[in-house]
Length: 436
Image (cartoon, rainbow, N blue to C red; front, side):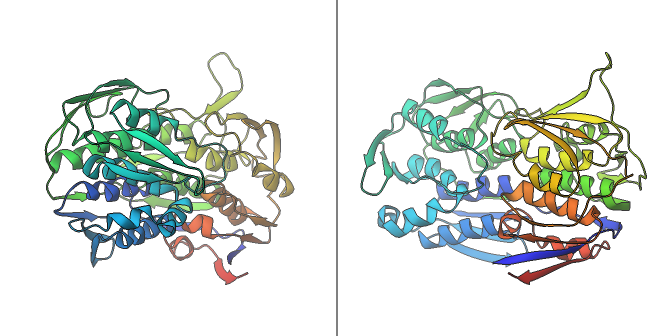
């Protein structure tokens, strides 16, 4: 197990470019299972979750060619379908959250799939009901294997239908779309997630010969086709990493430029930081965050306390609540954070309280932050990363702290951030990776 040793107080200055989007990568890589032809994908992030998924595809017989840095070709022409039933496959799926996105394409193309409870962040319940209900609407049957604690899903032929999703699940929407593109007839999905990464998935599938309309809305219509062909695709910049860099630049920046962010796909993210008083300047497709000795939290028009809450797109992604919360610890003013979608994601604030932050954890979903206005620096400490986003938030806190901190279990951070210490050290940070 590896750890980070962080010497706090070093200011960041310069230019940084975000990696490819993790969540989009998981979706579009799995989409390559829908065709025998080659699918070439560029800007693939070199991170643990994506690399593990690529290895899992190799294990089931996908021919994977690395054309260059962050550039892969996938050819799913000769899959070992028997391996999908093996205990080894089930065990690997159980350790990788992204493996759930293989179900839709496998069910759509081959009429069968195996479902294990996937791994991932420990941030509360992340149910798969939306996926299952969508597959059932399309005509799939489920058989539970009690001994192995898995579901076998079968369908002789999926048939399009109308469905109203019980929640706008991102992975659920992606899975149902991928299952539907080869189904017989027309599928209409209402209350679909419409994040930019879902839009990107739909654009790729249409390039492959699918017939999807309603892209960017919550009402998606899919007319089934008999087969898909190869295509080329480039993954968007990771909006969560962009938000993380805004937070770092606000806390410990001396002028930071974030290049090629795909501004039109960031939605409400820049404005969410502006609510905390952060100057986020737009120059072309770059964001520039100048040095800020103070940033003052906005209030609502009626003077009530600023509240920042997550919501399905185009609302604020829950993945940035942790970062925004850390940034608020040094703002002038108070903020109520409401993490609606996951009930365990705020528990990491205990570590921030130990570092001297003024935070009241109201319940598993809400926390009030009273900012220090840079009058009191956070204290260095030793902590453990519980999930990807809390991990990066703790890293930001450690970079701003007085003294040297240690973060254990940084494999969680590696799951979502590519060579994060190397890239930040080029800006002036002092972060060392060590064996625990």
